[in-house]
Length: 137
Image 1 (cartoon, rainbow, N blue to C red):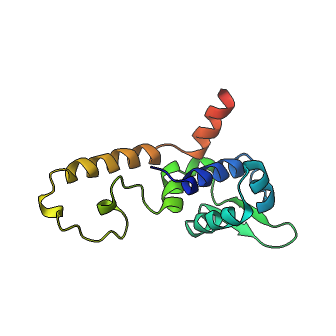
Image 2: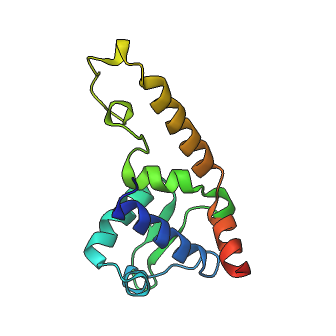
């Protein structure tokens, strides 16, 4: 399940993608438009900056902007930056401890396949595509 943090990260990225190219947008404006608390948004933006999806500029005309064009930002990257992992089960998660049942787990191939299907799908959708779809309909 995608958490609130992941959903908000995608909303923020779509918001930034909808602004003029290269324009820095103050965090306060994004928070107001998306109805997200500034404090919570700061934590999300930190993760997006660390992943290289967003860049920040301090100062009077500072704010945030996309780190690259919307067509080069996949939904999978955004969600992984926010969530840490898109694994359907804890044993496949990033930094997961070795499961004692892993060697004989008959369900493990199912979970790996599901993780791959979801990851491939989300990696195949970009911010640019989502923006285009929202403008069409």
